[in-house]
Length: 247
Image (tube, rainbow, N blue to C red; front, side):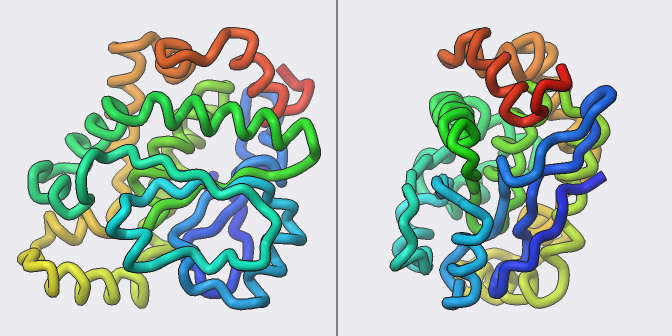
């Protein structure tokens, strides 16, 4: 089960995290969205964000990425937050970490405060009937880890969390990945299968390993969020925000 695809012109990986199985119920639509970068949005795309009642956009990209491709959100009455979960430039991080597993461990090591900030914005916006959107460049790694943390913490079926993550690769194949390959070549990356996986891959086993690491190190995603400052009451409220009263 993958999040619901939402047509948003000039994005490749935008979706609503509603209708995912969580015990006997489903996650609610219109609460939490994920996406790739928003720098190519047109008037049509901006109008769609208005219709979706997106109140907060959390941009996980680093300064270089934002300066190179600023989000096209002018004219929208929404809150834009920044949350860099990779210290230094992304390109440097990728050169130092040859596997997605290693990259995700670094995101978790550095992204605790951002994950809590995201959870609290979801709570605030959901109480007002509004949505929260989190994105990076691909909407795959930084976004994928943050989304998996929240979904897993509130009790979305573990395999649904994994499948939502792994479904990203299909969204990025073709035109998006071709463009990234050109960019990476210009940055001096040799284009190997390993680099292609880092750029556009989302293997299910990587997310299973990451969630297993959270289990072993923090007692699960909820434990990770609480370790970084989210209270148990806030975790319960987050469950209600994403699942309604079906706890």
